[in-house]
Image (cartoon, rainbow, N blue to C red; front, side):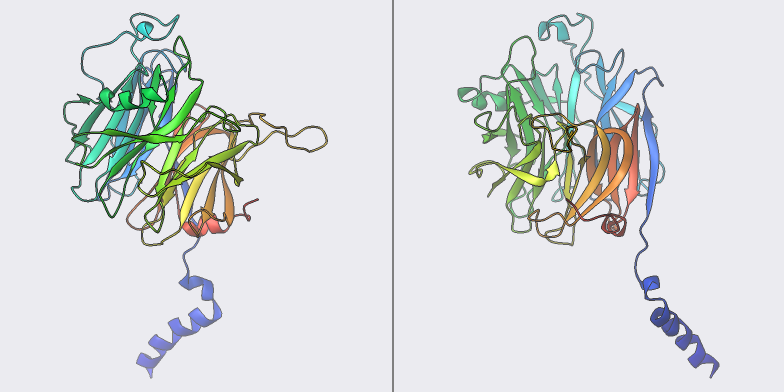
Length: 394
């Protein structure tokens, strides 16, 4: 009788309290970088990946003297081997080669300063390597890799030549990878990185357009894809772009722009490099002209998460103001369960000042969002139940 009671009690609890059998929504935040400390004025441009061994890597720009895009900037990285609960000390991981003055590319910049910008990592599920790209003074691009989960990195190799193929359609004077993270296509193993190119003068970041570069030999060589989001018609200065592989193997790009509709631009390719569909504005994804994060959820085909400041500007009558550049506040997480056809939930992560963000998923399904808030770079850990508990996406 006693043995039977031991089995009946848990069953009764599940019947009376069915929520006990489901995951409870959870959220926690840890500040990892803070401007004004450690000798740096500001830390910006977050990126995050999770390696094949489950190690979480976060990386960013460490801006030495000011918060400006051009100046003395390094790339720093932190590691976590316990699911983002604790983190190793930050360290510089690029660029250690010959210094190149940013003043050669940006009018009015200080000759003694060097800008190392737009870091992007890609996890190689087939080899276990972490591929890492970054730019130098928005003019050159370098590649390095880690074969020990981000403990050490190889000597950088310049891959700027891969961008030359774009010049026939975009006479760029500024190049940039990502930012955020790149992806690897599951079927082919192709490594793919979103890039944006600007063709103004004096280091201007506009006019601009978005594209991808890719590698089919695990990072040994890199090639240019087609222009994915041109600067034409309704599409005004597309630039910072996130990428995700859909459940059927196609690749979706999600792009920031300064277009009148104040919405993210979306385009899809069969291979992540060519055949891009005509870009469209995604009504559910507001764009206050800010970088965004995008990821799929392993083991849940069609399930996507998107992060950015859910913010728009409205006039005194409550009507949306076209091309209004909403405030960088209210970073939120949106959920889709059908490859982005619909966004069924929207959960505020940070109500106040918050901007760039990136997303990755741990082996146990915990989601990491590495994002900017005030002068801090913070990692948030949450589960899908926390997102689902949010309001329906607009």
